[in-house]
Amino acid sequence: MLVTYDGIVIGRREIGENSCFIDILTDEQGVIEATAHGAKKINSNLLSSAALFSYSTFCLNKNKLRYTVNSAKPKFGFHELGSDIVKLALASYFAQAVKYCTPSEQVQSESSRDSVVRFFAIALYETLHAGENGRSLAAVKSAFELRYSSMLGFAPDLVACDNCGQYECERGMYFLPRKGMLLCKDCLNPEYDGHVLLYPETLFAMRCAVFSPPERCFKFSVSGAAEKQLSAITEDYFLYRTERTFTALEYFKGLAL
Ligand SMILES: [Zn+2]
Image 1 (cartoon, rainbow, N blue to C red):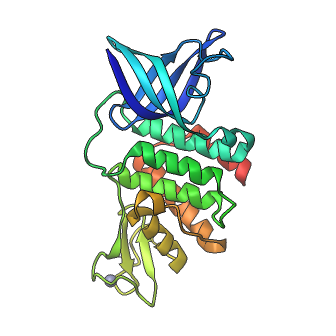
Image 2 (image 1 turned 90 degrees about the vertical axis):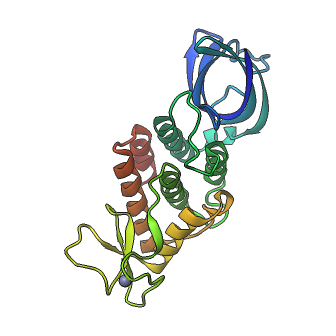
Image 3 (image 1 turned 90 degrees about the horizontal axis):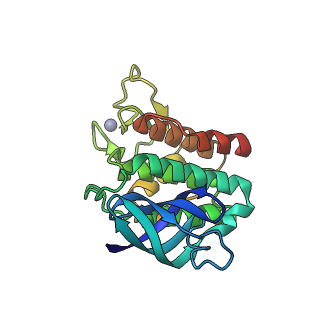
């Protein structure tokens, strides 16, 4: 049976001299493992589509439980990520996160309105172009962690103070990471665990990452102490919700710090 999906290659394992297995992220079926026969031959029409982070329309042959790539038409390539080891490491963290959190070969639930393939393509694009537009790699990472948490059903409630409904408070807004909610200074009980007094830029960035349309959710800039605060909050939030850590994240942090 032939099936066609738009997808992005988020993993690749070599088989012998000429072929490979690729993990394709799709909206329809989660992550699909497919064999790309001859993809490493220089004259193969799968050469670019089977590359890591290639975004293509894949025509797959499904035989019982196995998929084979029949043909592929590239839509967009992010191969330039390979020329910057830090950006490549960040993209690899995103790929590991998505692979871990997306069920294999299952129809995706309707709980998220965003296309995960489109979101992942935007994340790769923003990673590739980080530094060119005033946005740091750390900000791209934070936007990914918070937005993807939301797509997985773990959206923090950042609308207003959970108790009194104030959108902003002159005396400061606090984030409660374990509860995933905001409290204003007036409503905060100091005994709450791990509350963080947010810089205004941090709160703006967090709201942008969660509430903007996917193409806008990376489009904020933070710097200095607010950027450090945002980084700490979003990484902790994502890892706590997914209940694990990622080797690619540790590798990225080793390079970037
Ligand atoms: Zn309040």
